[in-house]
Image (cartoon, rainbow, N blue to C red; front, top):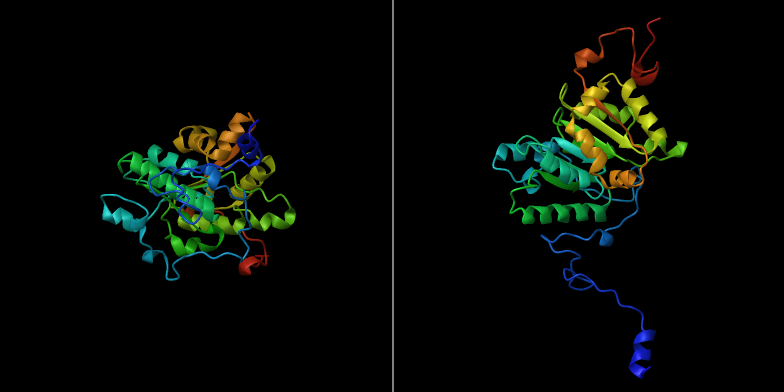
Length: 293
């Protein structure tokens, strides 16, 4: 063995970086190039109720958001309207980009919402690369935004403006003290109902945790503004198969041949929700409710 061989053998292996990484101070991925997921790994979940992070949002309401920066369409009016499909907690954007091709481009605008900065940047670069590959003929109807939807949805979206909202494999928050962090709750369902268009809007929930699925079903079934879709109705909805197969977590569950649990709920009209005067959704003492007796 020569001295050069000994020298090279004792040196640690140097990681070879992709060509898109100029240096330690340069961009990790150049816009238009497909990002590599290994450079954008982040903690799987975070606390949505924490106050240790900052988010940009319009304080004067959703009418002041420039959606043209997110969607590219020939119809400027559609740009002004903003998204009508939300993939909340979109992760690495598998479902977001799949829905962009699955749903009619001239009717649906899909926005992935993600709370983690690095993951949001990955999805942004992924969409930019897909648009470049298709010469801007595809994926112009999808985008991503970093936000905390448990806090800022009223700042971002108008009443009855959404047609579909997806919650795919959310954080289970197993500990009882952390249940207020769950993305589906009585309070948040009322908020989602405000943004979903009656008789059109649908709320999709899927998880591989049966306890969390039972929580979703209990909360959604109890809410007067949502109607559970039958098995036959769900089979006719192409989005149900997409949320099972296109998300990164869904693909992991399929590879492991594990179970998935899901449900779909439709937003009903307000007058349909409160036809029975004897049924009170709120308990006595909540929001000023007083017993009739």
